[in-house]
Amino acid sequence: MSDLSATTAKLQRMREVIAAIPSGCVLSYAEVARRAGVPRGARLAVRALAGAEAEGLPWHRVLRADGRIAFPPQSREWREQARRLRAEGVDVVDGRVRVRRSNSLDALVWG
DNA sequence: CTCATGACTAGCT
DNA sequence: TAGCTAGCCATGA
Image (cartoon, rainbow, N blue to C red; front, side, top):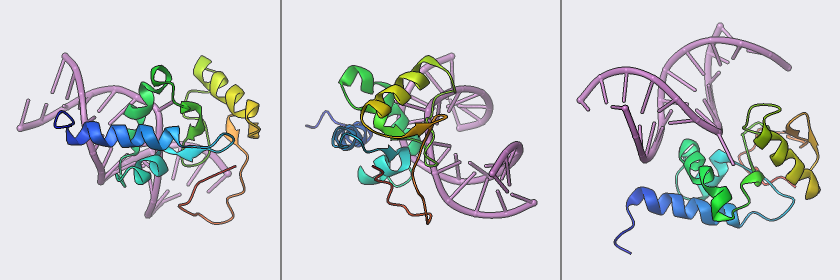
């Protein structure tokens, strides 16, 4: 346990948060970080997601705060993420998750 | 130590 | 609505 640095612990909690996202739902990087105890750790969440594919985590359920896929449009990863989301019943149009954001809420548990 | 980079955000124009 | 800027955390050169 003592092997875990503060940063490693944060990343680990983020991975747990990501792993806990239900199928058909998505979270923003900021929200993942927030749930892991790192209010401004959106960029840290990126690190947690960078190796998510190898970790077997549902990385495709993490999007940007505006509901868009974080990868460059038409890129291989971009297509893959959109494909997986649709497979889970999420409406994805032009790389953006169709969600009604009536008010700018912090709670971003879409689905 | 300083500078640059990244699957980011919120705020301002 | 769209574009730009500064702030954010951590890592590597």
